[in-house]
Length: 407
Image (cartoon, rainbow, N blue to C red; front, side):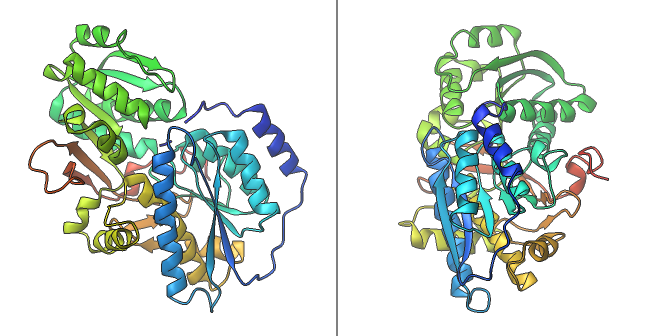
């Protein structure tokens, strides 16, 4: 989330991609260190989430190394700031490949930025495992044999949340989307889930990334008297829009629903602003009560991070790097073709329960947790959500590979 900037790739990105096309693929020697490049937006509006992705990815590196690595060869994470910009991301990715000689790439926190990273990586024959939501990255023409997608897709996320929300809170809906790839793909997913349920779309409104004042939109939304307001935005946009909707009194008549309800946004905005908001998430630390792998991951994070707990997008940093290293271990090699083959169809339980990499598009098939923000009966400062339901891992909930353009 998912995750920013416009879906349009900048001219600088295209120039970087053009230079990549002209360069031959790199053949790597069996260096002693297994280098994994990790471009994420350390600066910018998603910096909090990105820093947690790094912290979690380092846990996966430490696990691999403590287990002996690959025949004694240890892994190293090379973190770079993509500044939430496709052109910057393309440049940093090319440097990681050309100068730092990485064997693999993981990372990203933007729908458009991950496509820029993938474009460079696939032209150079480097395996890239994206940890940001996108439908486009697993579909042709963007996908390639070296493209993997650890994060959920908007189609999966919005479908799970939409089916729950439309069943429980009503069919009259207003959509308010951040007008870029993340918001647009999420709303497409809600509409696909809602059509067979007979939802009535009262309005489909858009706002630019980085909006700070929603006062012109809220009276219009309230006048339409929707059962549900779907807020398809991310990071600070989500914090501000939910707080202003709460202050305006919209919750008195309307249920606020977000495709992704961010742990970091909830901590930043507070209990009152987010109270009663429904959303989806790929991970919530509280599932540790019933999920042993979550408890093991959380405990490692606590030990390394002053007893705090990992965020949702942070956990994806762990999972994205861990899946690559699981492929390396399974293949017994860092050879790209062998690791790709080892990751295809891989079944694993890293931190949230059963997952599987679908062979046709390299999408991770996984559960979606439906959560509600709470303001009462919190066991501690991190106990901010109730898990209302779990949409179990099921490939039938994804777009079909045929629909994505795969044979």
